[in-house]
Length: 329
Image (cartoon, rainbow, N blue to C red; front, side):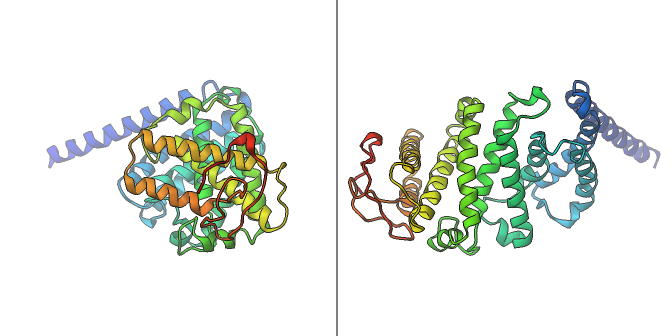
């Protein structure tokens, strides 16, 4: 019995030492050199982050991030997370980093693939999550962190593009089919608010690209089909296509003013095709990309046949010689 108690005490001591060590590492990194305005918030951040380590380990082990079994750990984490974030300025984009760490990453770890949030967790939770995601994308694009040491933090770029990817892949009205289903695209674009969000994402994304060096970030995990490079151009293609669908459908389209969206689509398709060839992607994935291109394609009858698989059977006739929209299909 004494041997058993000693072993139990040893295990308990090791756990305590590990927790204290983890806390001190986080404290040194986030609190010691924090601006005076952030010290109290960062103390809560460190407390939340220490608890979050164990929560995320359980999620990585296969427990869904919303499973009631791990709710006590999540609730303890959220106490410090919510209290700490309330101490940050409403315009401090560090808030986005907190959201990414404590909300977005657990979902990433347990989603089993994007596109099912609303169906799996319900509309009330899903749309609230996506509204928050959009809000934090805008916050990060519009404002530098008040703590200037975060300005060039590569994690800022990661957070921005992760949030952008989740928003574009999870936003649905038709929950039974994929995001780019014809029905979902039609239903999404019935809502002007969604169009305004896509328009805002386009502008915020371009502004963010000018303010941050993303080239090295995009090359990270380049050979991973689900990596950042591929997702970056997929999102560019999707956002520009959705903007054009709405504008043409509602007689808002102007050849010259909206040329930039066609330019982005052309560049994105070109980059994606080059990418799937370079990494020797499978035939099924290449075929999947071409199906995606046809679904989102808006033919320009000066250069293309009218055929496409877009939900509205729409096309344009614009002189875009300078951007070489000559796909011939």
